[in-house]
Image (cartoon, rainbow, N blue to C red; front, side, top):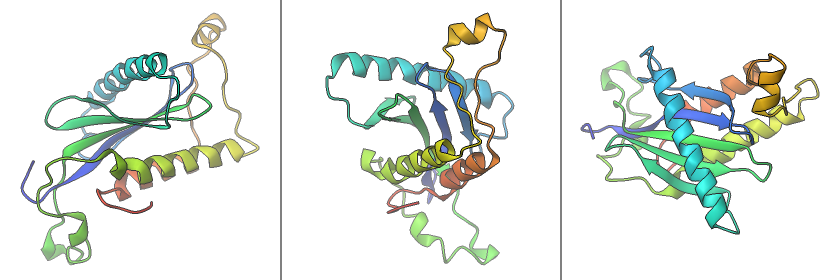
Length: 189
């Protein structure tokens, strides 16, 4: 981990009950690489196998699945499953964002966000982010003008449609806000 950096969210994925990606948001510095979209899509898809395996081996499945997989020393995937089968996956970059430059004037306010180098991340530290993502998703579902696409992948293919995707600007902005606001130890977002 870089000196004085704090773990940060690299990606938030919302996956349908039929394992189709509904929304994927990438965060700095991962959103600048043109290949990152595909790399994180593969990473999220590999997490779906773990969701499926845990669902088969566990009778009572808690919403918070905790750590799904650690990719390397840098990236770790955490999962949350709703009672309707929607999956939320948050990929955390343990190298995180560099601390703000104190000469920019805002550094003193954010010192609590950048403690000395952390050794790891507890599953519970992501609960505020997962709750905020679930709340954003619930708000999207409560919108009477939003029509969720409930088709299975086979139905989408048979009718020449494209994969369902969340295009709500309000939802996307809220996911971006959550990803940028989260830091280890935050009580709520």
